Image 1 (tube, one colour):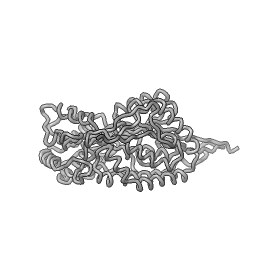
Image 2 (cartoon, helix red, strand yellow):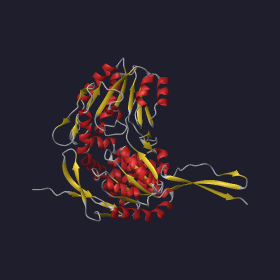
Image 3 (cartoon, one colour):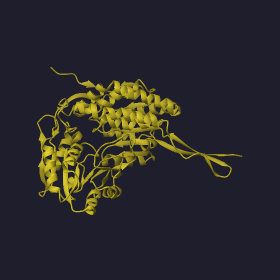
Length: 478
């Protein structure tokens, strides 16, 4: 007996639709490795339809008052709370994430973030009107940019969808959002939830692969393209958008340094860093994956971290004792395994370093020591439950190693010395520096990087302003 696969569909102009040509993609549950659904493989006709709907809906949504848009977003936040268990189930099947951690660590922040942007809709700021030239008054208008083409990743499909649509809608834009081809289920459910609240055409979801995303970015209608993904994907988006000078918002990879000085409470640091490195199977651009430890405590720290890794559990979503679930897909399992298989002879696997089980895409919590700054695993993003450890002799070398990668998203410093923490936070070339903690995010503070980690900010008033444009209006007083 066979189980009928769930059928996911695009959401365009207020209705659910199959791909125009009927093509589909199999969707796999990474905890089992089994296909559980199909989603549309959207082509040019689907992209055209979604962009046409978003463009048609834009004038009325743009002209809605901030209070009206706030009211809509607050209704969306309430609906997310009401449908929380449905969202959790969809996300867990999408990703294999632990159900209880998704309930406590993802849904509440998502709801809070939507409510933050609902408030931000009514708090646009700019220079005061004034006479900067005699006889003339200048004012500054902040306006929505227009239709936004948005591409969300597979590591946090549900939360990253919120990070995309909430500021865009709050600012008065309309949205065409594409989830990853491996994790469309929760985004399609979000469309169902939002669809009963926003006017048709304001929020659209199309499913598909890289070609679908490319067609969205290259389409002439969007005024802005926003993507959270790999550096390669970001470069391709920037190149495509340049052809018609679209605005681009990129949140790309990370290789966060975690700089641990000799005065740190080792036990506490190991406890926090292991969680920040292994949470969500290390599939987080800000994960604490690259630890730099003062040479005087290096061996003790490595031993304690390896012990913490050996005590960290991965497993099925309904197991409340696990910290993380599987890697997202077979390709990601192969990528993480490849980094470990290619380790140089001088590297030492202190814990883990292997797949767990023969069903699904689980990988053991892994700690690797003995590495050099130019090793592949130090320079490139693994995006898995792998923490590397390197010793450093002094502050100068710690900064050299920390900044010596092409990524610049997040970092942390662990020390009891306040002056040292301030020096390091100034010198670390990363969009975020945590001190004696790693990975907390709040809606009020910006998230975004430098260098090959991209540009633009998510969350905060800065993230909201990214979805607006500035217009100068000058009038004669004569």
